[in-house]
Image (cartoon, rainbow, N blue to C red; front, side, top):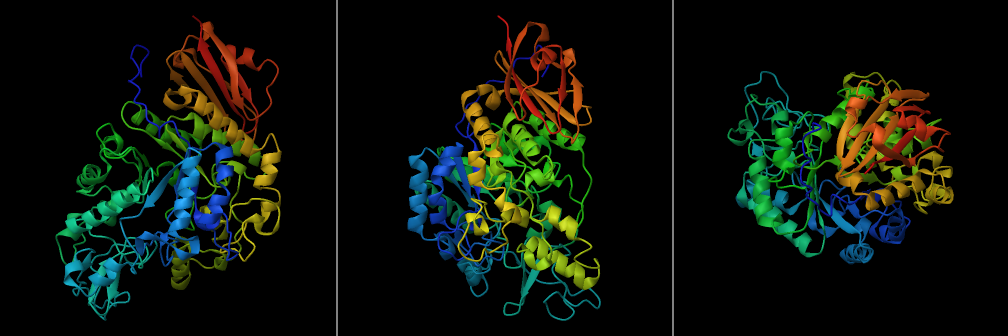
Length: 590
């Protein structure tokens, strides 16, 4: 935005002004001693969530499931998994949250179901349900091919590979057809071309809204429309790669129908998980702009920066890359649309281990990353444990992992010789695996971090004796108390929510500097992404205010203030310590 342009009109919404806390129930708090977190365990910790100050809980799937993919393979959308409790427990949780003015959003997983869902079981034997899923014939024109779990000489319908490894098709011997599964073979894809499927999904969504939830996080929602090569051909052709399912030909039509049939008139918060990379801003605005069907979205651009292609591969990235990606999204949705600001979730490694320094500067880098999350324009997300600075787990064997996205491809690569040994890829798996985020919440320094009295379903990080909630609460300088301060500041300052973003000194090697501006209030944010000191000079021509006629105050920071700090900033200069985060409030003189 140029100096002479007026800022866009503010379109206020409660979900823009909220802070979201994501709970992975399996790993949050166990009350039964079976080693698996449960809904009563969440109820026990509602006061903790209230103390932290969050406004919305995003609950990962708690529906009935055989757990091939930790609940993202749903067998019944309208029931609660026995391991997690009962529907009565869930209703008590909803009431406990609402009593504290905390809203609840549920995970909506409708690209696929479990192969144990009633619809899929019927689709194998009943023509009336056959078209609920994507059943296709295999190919017989592939010389000498032995199918993957299929008949001799028959190849899968096309050459697509699952996101979890192997072909994206599984063969059913009774039906003598193949069904599509873009993820695990126990997660068959629904056929959204079938209007009866859409009606079933919309009825289910309305059922949950009537129970009192406040919205949905929509899992891989931009995969629901498959390309014509699959939709209109049996067997499918190979002219379209699997990536053509991303933002497929009818996805906007399907979501517009969802909005019209379910969401219109509801004061619901909706987040679309948009799998893939490098989405255009024009496409993003079709999802979340003023006329879009969703409130906001999760893009993957920044969390794929270190993706080397395979789960055991890594790519190098630097501050220029991270800053460039997030600035692109800040600018791209500045006038139309709304960002979701996250650095971790149940599908990503721990943020301090990935984007920070989880050793010497764990506290400093954890609080710097929190400052980034809370001072960019968008709704901020906290994944459980980030608020105490939890780190990646030191996995030592493949047997310690639980996630199919790690186990399946590594097992296959070991069998076919793509990799020599687990040891040869251990460091990369420690960095990349989703299981890093799924290790249990560390509540105190007792056995298993206070998560369970039994054997935890996945290992507890051995650093729980030092990194835990009890210790964090008692330390005024802890990551936890810094998060609380940021949440309180955001609740009281519109500039943190609605202020326009402007990048400063965008070529600096390790300091990210930017401003947020709302009416006559400004924030100046300085973040040193380095294990060493750094200095920055702020160019006058990039500032959205006249630096000679403003008042400067320290707003928040993760180090104690330095003598002369404000005077230096007044002269457009700052020296920052390793992983230091500073935010200044800038008020224009009248």
